[in-house]
Amino acid sequence: MMGEGKKRLTAQRKLELYLETRQKDANLGEIVRRHGVHLNDLRRIEAVVERAALEALKVRRNGNGPAAVGTGEYNALVEELARKEQALSELTVEYTLLKKNERLGSKGRSARFMSTANGVRR
Image (cartoon, rainbow, N blue to C red):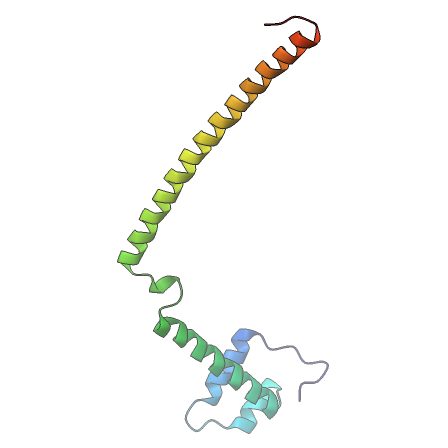
């Protein structure tokens, strides 16, 4: 039983408890008493540890995760990133030129408008 005055078990302590119960000839009753946990708490810890271990093994087997990227795939991703950076750079230059032309064009229009409003024609 986990009483009010007992400390919560850290993840490290739970793992140690789990490993200790897996030893040959482990006395579960003595182990749970020493750690101050109930047998149901131990069963929950076992379930969590085993589920986490299975998930970790699935990640590697399925090829997911950062460690699973091969050299060829990495190189392809680097090349794709370089192409996208180049395209972004070209679009940035084009956008800057369009904005500059727009500003120059609007200044010319406003000068023409002001001159016709004052009765002066160009």
